[in-house]
Length: 239
Picture 1 (tube, helix red, strand yellow):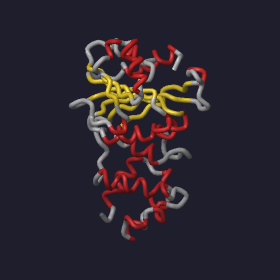
Picture 2: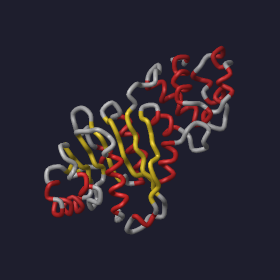
Picture 3: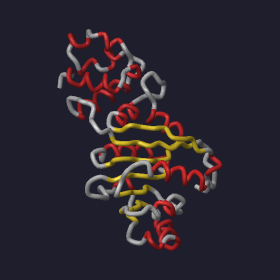
Picture 4: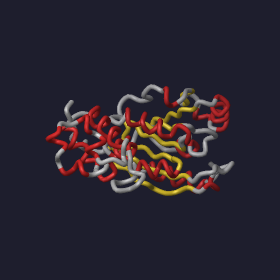
């Protein structure tokens, strides 16, 4: 990333979160990192897989020595005890997997500010009724308040990618939405959206008894249900 204005906007968005522990995913050549290391009074770490980039970072930002985890983020153990915040210009080929890893850590991740491919960001932040509202929208928004902050054009990067990007901020919900269990919720949401063109009744028939399936909510398709609707339905599931 070469556009300093975008870097500064991301850092400003991050600083609206309150945190003591910060993890950067994929610092690369340090476009964001050079700002992050200046944030006072925090514990900062970064995860980077590329050994050459680590060497470059330590050479140009000596304060990063000892703060870089040389590993693939998808294989990393939780980097801090207790709460922490995540920031990054995420590698687009694994950005959805990064999101699901953050969901695994949802009880510890207070806030996330990240850059995604624009279409992925739109899916994560979509509301019910939207054509792009789906599994990632529901599973993420059940546990985080998601804000689509701003779009980033191809010209902000060198070399420019073939896609537009967008920055999201996710803040952990203060109170969890009541649900029978996370396992039930994940199963229901995935089953419903795997056959999103069908009515809910036909898509999730195996998960409910016939009496429950007769209820009016099952006339709808998955994309018409709110997150609260899905959560409420988990209490009526067979198992």
